[in-house]
Image 1: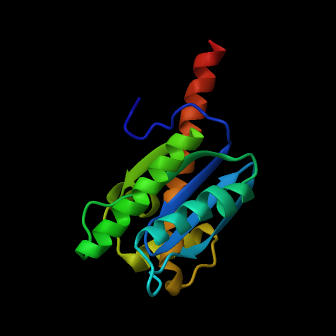
Image 2: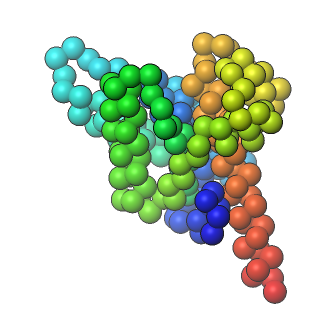
Length: 178
């Protein structure tokens, strides 16, 4: 299995893509339907850092997972190596741990994707800049404003995940036909 070959389908049919952060962009596709949006997990006055992670788990396993027709098969998300600050790094890896835990609990495929890989898939360039990503997402047909960069990133990751999933299904189908 290659680095980004989608695992065999689990219980669901949906692909969920995430741009992880305080403002988490999300996009999903399942059974010829799709949706996208933004969910914020800001630190609230007087609360422990763990509350942000708990809110993310509740959002993903409840609100978001329940809206995806056919359920979740796989989650694709940015595999970020460098962060602007130590706080951003701690937050990213906390959210990532939540995603990995949910994937293990629900038997969803967990697929981190390097930033240059999904960006090159979307734009043809491994380091395109925010404007180019936004332009490519708009060209595909999504009405995303410059203020919705996290959503644009999630849509780019979703495009990558759907193609990987499609190639894997075709490969499995051709093997089963023999």
